[in-house]
Image (cartoon, rainbow, N blue to C red; front, top):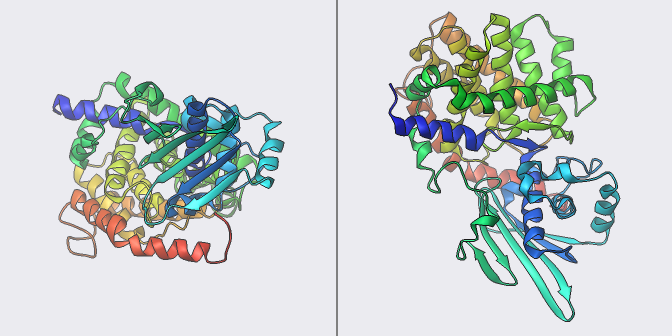
Length: 440
């Protein structure tokens, strides 16, 4: 039986993390910061500046910004956010764009409305948007800094005066479901996650899980119908045996990624700040559940397991890293699938360890169409890891590479490599990506 503190913490984590987002979350976070800055400024600015960490540059550079007619770039995301002027919609901010706004985005881009700069020496998720307008001879300004999480506002200034956090202008900032020090995440461990999933009152988790299923299935279906990216999902179904649940599970997640990386405006429910991870952690579990004839309650409980185990891994790795988040999400999916198939706690742990021990070397080189292929690859490894554990009773042993004495130790080990050991790798990836002289 879980204690009340852990129970409430896990409920809060799910509410905080499983939220809708339109398109790739990094350009949307930039648009959100810009929209918030316009809200603070109170008028249409004459010019903008944005300072982004290299990780943001990496994840915005190659992906299309939704509702812009296929345009790319940090400047496009800023302009779109300013024109949308709907910060209260957070990661769905660009839903407010109208078709006629597209011409305005292109015109402002051509006019050099937004200056983009690399925030030197800052790692992880960091976006600093500054807007300027004239009132007579005086220049008015607004500044918003988003850091660590995609809607995590850390600073608001107006005309050089700090409103938040110094002024505690809480009406400008959404209340988080978790505490500022994120101590709730320290409680995550596989044993308690499984115990929570098996005992939680459905009404405490069903709304967020049902929304995840509905939104993520919808964009996967769109990815299979339309022509997006290189159509990894459609290719899997066309070139493999679609009667095989393993093929369908991978194809659905990949198809959703195909669509969102190509700028599809349909929302997804994210995990760890990522739509691709939200797709990877949920759709394979749902597909297996339906193959097994599981009822809605069992599907919901399985998704609680998959989501929370993915979040445990990402708490060590960090939101943005050179470590591909599809791997941690796929390992979470393997846990949910193992539970659906009647696996014990030990089997679930072995499935997770097998999955991340197999595919832990996949690199993140930014958001783009090939993310769909990485999702398919990570899920193939995760499903193999689950089958090794559940059907063959086999698992990698303590001391084999990064595998620890238990699943949580393995998760911590990989987290150390992902968050610390891969920092130089991340820097080199970004240097290579920007080495051709292209703009941010």
